[in-house]
Image: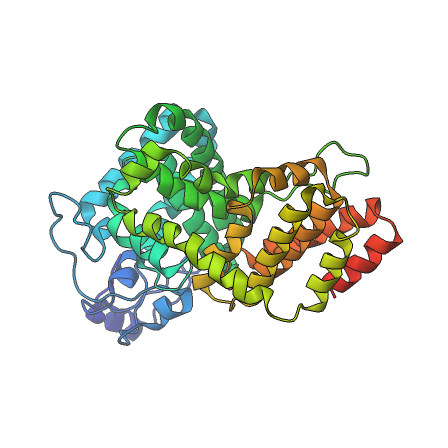
Length: 410
C-alpha cells in the first residue's frame, strides 16, 4: 500500500514506531512517486529515479524503463518494445499457468511458487539487455520477433520461465534456492509437454515455437543434467544433455521443418546456419596451417597410434578443436563452439555412447574449450562435465592415458 508524504510526516510527528503493538516490525514505508521506473512500480519498491537506469534495475541486470503503461494492444506486434508488460498479457499468463496446473497434477504443489515468479520471470526474459540468451541475434529474435508465441504454447511458456528464473538465480544470490527450484520444475514440465506435442505438431504452424523451445531446452539440459560418474565397465557413457543439445540439428535435418522456419521469424538463423558450414570449412583450413598447441599435438599423436579405419573422422574432430582454440571467448562464438556436438557425425556420437576412449578424450577437451565461450549458463557445467569425463577416463585408462589427460587439462 502506497503511503503519502503527508501521512509519513504526520506519523513521524507522533513518534511513530517502526514496531507494531505486537512487537513485529512494520512494513517499510516511503513516499509515493509517479516518476519511478516501470519495474520498481510493479515490484512496489522505492525507485531512486536515476536515469538512464535506476540502481535497483542496475543491480539485477535488467533494463530500466520509465513511463506509464499504455492501454493493451489488440494483438502482439513483433516490433513493439515489450508487449508482455501490457496488463492484458498478465491475464493471459495467469490463464496459461492455471491451464497447465489443471492438466498436470505434478504442478499443483508448486503452483504458488511458479505464480510468484511468473510475471517477474516473463518480464526479465523480455527486458534483460545482457548477452545471456546464446548469441545476440538469437536473443533479439527471442525477445522481440518470437515473443508473441510464448503464451500460446505451454511447453514454450514453461521453458521461458525455466531459463529466466535460472538467470535470476544467478543474478540474485539471496533468492537462489527459490528461483532454482522454480526453474527446474518449469523445465521438467516443459520437457513433458514438449514431447507430447512434438510428433503431432511438427508439421503445423507451431514449428516456430518448437524450434524456440528446443534452443532453450538445449541450454537447460546442459545446465542441469549432470550424470553421476559411471563405474568402470559401465555399458554407456552417453550424457543426457548431449542428445538434447543436438535437438536443433535434428530439426534442421527435416526438410518440411526447415521450409516452414524459412518463412517465419527464425529465417535469419536458418540462413546463418547455412552460411556457417561454408565459413567453418575456411576456418578449419586456416587453423590447420597453424602450429598445434601442446594439447592438440598430444591428442593427434595418440590418435595416430589407433587403427586407421576411423582416422579421417578423428582428424576432422581434431581440426575442429584446433579451430575452436582460435575462437574468442564471447557470446557470438557460442553456436560455433556448440557445433562440435550439434554438427558432429553420428559415428562420433555413437563412440561417445560406447565409452570409446578417443571419443571421450576429444569430448573432455571440447568441454574445457566450451567453458570459455563467455555465457553464464555454460561455464560451470562445462567445467564439471570435463572433470566428470576425465575422472571416468582415469578409472578406465592406463598410464599413457593419465599422462595424456595431464597435458590436455594442464
